[in-house]
Length: 93
Image 1 (cartoon, rainbow, N blue to C red):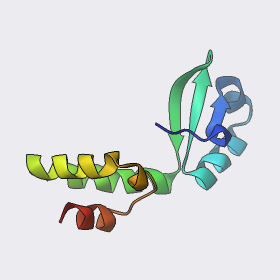
Image 2 (image 1 turned 180 degrees about the horizontal axis):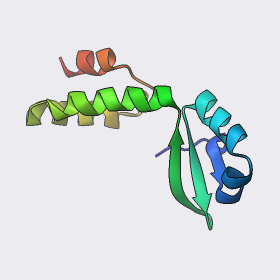
Image 3 (image 1 turned 30 degrees about the vertical axis):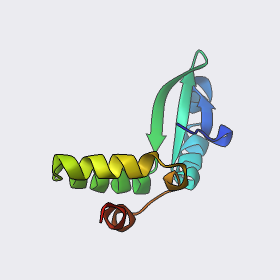
Image 4 (image 1 turned 120 degrees about the horizontal axis):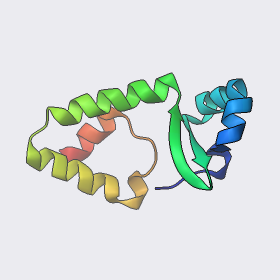
């Protein structure tokens, strides 16, 4: 998993500066909250959450071989960028 250093926030910063952390999550899509130098939680923007929810629902309805095709496609380094559902479906064909 690639994590942008800008998206890392300490647990104490999250507690003290929630509003700025929420704004950062909105601009980056998500932030990783660290506790004792270990990833502890993730705060998603609502748009990122909705995007992931759609993808999860789509994946739940796929047949096994289709899931394998998508997983293989996503494992390729050039596909690590954000992809739309339509792009993922196109990759499967």
